[in-house]
Amino acid sequence: MYNYQHPSLGREVFGLKFPNPVGLAAGFDKNAALTDELATLGFGFVEIGTVTPRPQPGNPLPRLFRLPQDEALINRMGFNNDGAAVVAARLARRQNRQLIIGGNIGKNKDTPNEQAAADYVAAFETLADVVDYFVVNVSSPNTPNLRQLQEKKPLIELLQQVQARNLARLAPRPLLLKIAPDLTDSQLDDIIEIAQETGLSGLVATNTTISRDNLSTNAAQVAALGAGGLSGRPLRARATEVIRYLHRRTGGALPIIGSGGIHSAANALEKLAAGASLIQLYTGFIYEGPALVSRINRRLVPPAPAGSAPGGATRG
Image (cartoon, rainbow, N blue to C red; front, side, top):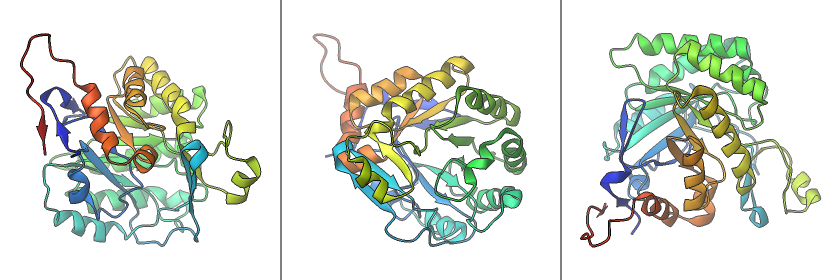
């Protein structure tokens, strides 16, 4: 029902061949428990995590909330996960070896920022043999002080350490950075410089926002839910702005995975037109269901020339 594939959907990005450009963002399958099941829904790739070196329970419950009027979510999960060793063992046992897996990595909550690089290196080393690409997550708003690592000096130092381990491997993995939508243009310029200086393969734009602007849900109700990152339709325009800015400033030389407010095929086309090479779903997947993946992929297939016989599409 859902696994629609077509030869024209294939994309080669940062050296990997994706069967289609629609992926699942990190945060849904944090522990790589569902990769085989998710593969049947037509995703071109699945990003697991965020994974930390040591297991941790995350923030106290409740920590995930729906805003149905806005088709949005607020979460303050706090990198709850089973730890890198358990996740790596689970990935080693998966049945579907064709599905491209991204590994989203972070630091443990109790690790001070001054020692954060060691956490990212440890998570990288543990997962390097079982994932196809890595995403360094310093943009979640739900781990105290984590976003301070987006500042230029600490971020360069962190990425250099992870990249050094990566490049020392026989088969280095593409290394990406996930950024927040709340960065200013000057901060985005810094991100581009950092990406170039540290040899990143690409960026994931964007993570959740701490903004609560332009919501239909009652402001008092939103405030009562407390802190957390907002995702879904309200993030669509800003995420697209960030993608477009990064694409223009780099001349398209830095691949971007676009994420944020993709609830329809039209939203997906908007992200791709802005400069994204691939896209990721999360909140749209929650509100629209798995048929969204198929709807997007079908819309991306060019119409057949008049008079030609239909063909080429396959169902998994």
